[in-house]
Length: 256
Image 1 (cartoon, helix red, strand yellow):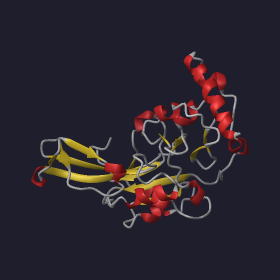
Image 2 (cartoon, one colour):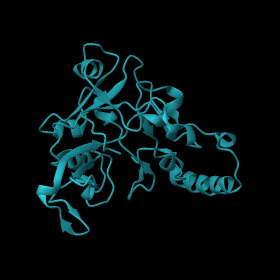
Image 3 (cartoon, one colour):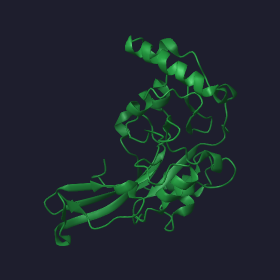
Image 4 (cartoon, one colour):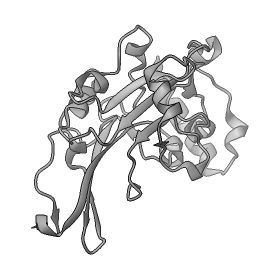
């Protein structure tokens, strides 16, 4: 039934989009979860990434794939790690082979290994869905398949997603993708199925260096909250006004 409905909606919405009807004109469907208002309003889930501690081992990426059933060999992942190599000439080389899943080898530019003596600095930056307070992806979804819980996490209802791709285009962080098996949009959910049961996210659990942490911003005693409130933290692409809730310690100015 869900598959038949999705195919019907894909055809219907495709025609509407082609006719350039405003998205607001056909927000006629909402998944049951939205109507129920899931999530605890007393909680606001946030993420803290310490770039000083990340070594690019890729264990977080592998753990995420396994936990969230993203095919291991697929060139997509819910979270990934980028390597930044800045040379003495001021050039920045960025790579993330397989999302950093298997770690990193010697950095190369145009197939040539970068001479270590010419490297000014190098570091790793984990990335994931920013669970924005003002999520553009929710605003553009024409059928309500992308929605925000009361505790701030943005989720995707697979049974309602029609694969139009508007949310993928709207996200300034590039965190959304088409799941190779389910054929609908997928993304990081902070492991919502785990954190709402008192567990931690798979990537947090897998990191042996404590580079990733998750907490409740509404709890002043939470170690993550204390770090965000008392230390120098930064967010990615603040200029977009999405109010991202993934905070970084030691975020370099070279990070894009």
